[in-house]
Length: 319
Image (cartoon, rainbow, N blue to C red; front, side):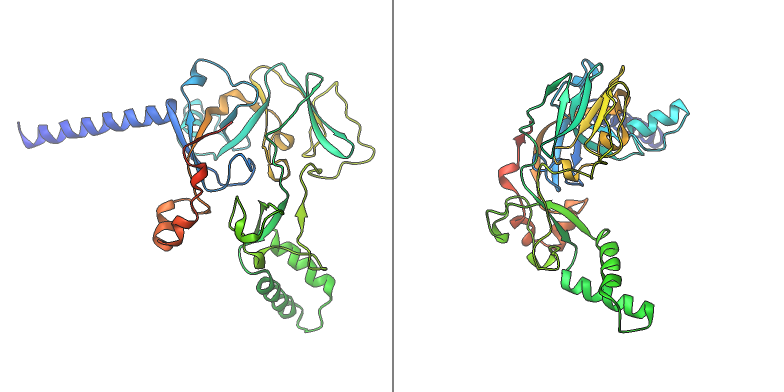
C-alpha cells in the first residue's frame, strides 16, 4: 500500500468516526453542566448530567420530566440548513427546566394567600419538587471590601469625600447586581455545614441592620399589580407568577424548580417542541464550582477540589 492511499484511508476512517460521534451525541445522548441555580435543589450549579435523546425520537415529553432544550430566545437563522446547525450542533445555550404543561393543556399561575400556585386544566398542582430553602445573595468577593471599593469609586467620581448614603447605596446596588449569585441556604445549620454550596459568610449580602438578605421560598417572583386581572380567555404572561396559557400544537410550558431564581416560560412563553432535545436522567457527578472545565479547577486547586465534591449526588437518578 502506498503512503498516499494509506493517508486517504486513515482520513476516511477519521471522518467516519467523527460522524458517528456527532450522530450519537446529537441523537443518542447528551452531557450537560448546570450553569445556574434555576433547578435548585434538584440540580445544583456544577453538576454534570446525562440526558437521553433517543426516547424523544419516538415519543413526546410528559408531565414532570426534566428536559434540556435550546434557548428559545436565540436569534435563529431563517435558513433551514443553518437553523439545523444551530439547533443541533452549535449556537444557542442549553436550558434545563421541568415540564409543567403539554400541548392542549391550560396552565395558570395564580396567587393564593399571598403565595404563587400553579393550576393545570383546573387542578392545583402539588409541586413537592420545588425548592424549599431561602436564597441568599453571595458575592464573588468580600462584601466589606466590595463596599469600600465602590465607595472609593463614587468619591472619585464626584470629587468629594462627602458622599451621601443614598448615592453610595445606588452604586452598591448597581454593582452587586453583576457580581453576586443567589444560592440556596439552609438556615438550620452553620455556614460550614451548608448542604448545597460552600458559602463564605463574609461574601453574603446583608441589610443595614446586619441581617442577611434572604428570599424566602413560596414568595412572589415579582410584585403583581393590584389592578392586574387574569384573563383566562387569552394567553398572557409578563414575567410574574400570574399567567394563563392554553398550549397549542407542539407547545410546552416549562418552569424551574427554583421559582425565585429561574427565568422560564413565565418570561418568554411556551417552548416549541423543535427546541427540545433530551430528557435529564441522572447526575454523573456534582462539584461545587462555577468553572466550565473541571480540569481547570483541578489544576488551580488540586487539594481543595476534592473537598468540594458532592459525593452523595454522584451517579444519582433525577426526578
